[in-house]
Length: 300
Image (cartoon, rainbow, N blue to C red; front, top):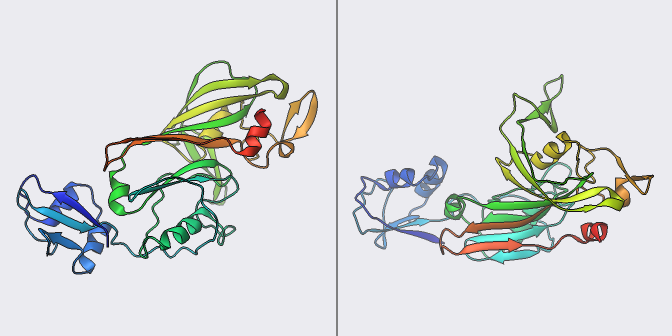
């Protein structure tokens, strides 16, 4: 059982109040109450109403939630970083992050749970940043509740290939809403709408490929809405290569109309780099991956 330790810097009427002041959820605290030994002060088992004094050493079970019941998948993981708090993997395109009806037996979540079963039999899946099925790149997994809560700010940079030429840096500041059809169902598509949520995307061109009429761009986001990069680039008439939901089915190369699938069978979008200050070591973690082979082939 992994215990998270705190040194109390001021008197507090109860552990419950301390945990609430430090941002722990009611569900987390409820699970801490379930089993004797999940809470300890100065190496002695206590209960949630125990009063804390300055200098006390409080230990709480870092992972009191019920084990994830996601179906396990035997899929190799491309692990970029791992320590006792976080697991960071490079997800390939075409692999769903979470189980869905059409991807119930093969998904990244199941592969992570299968991997972690050997390290923590009570592992609870906590993915910090999910990616669309067709988007490749870096995904952060917190190994316990405390690690999830303490990771405050992550800087993510995406690289993408878009149709046409972008010559200068662009800030796209347009609200995004979920498209609801006439029957009230979610169409799993987003649109630019004044009724939507705030969304800002910063776009910087890296290289223009004249013969293929496409630009390699770097993007970072404020807000991080679903499909944000895809919706925003489409809204300025530069849809991502391979994006059949928000772009055209075709684009032009040497004057000939070609299917996107000639080059890619997915959206040309990669979460290429991430950086954050590790909340437990205070080290700056900066990670960057190479482009997937199909994108390499397209830009070379």
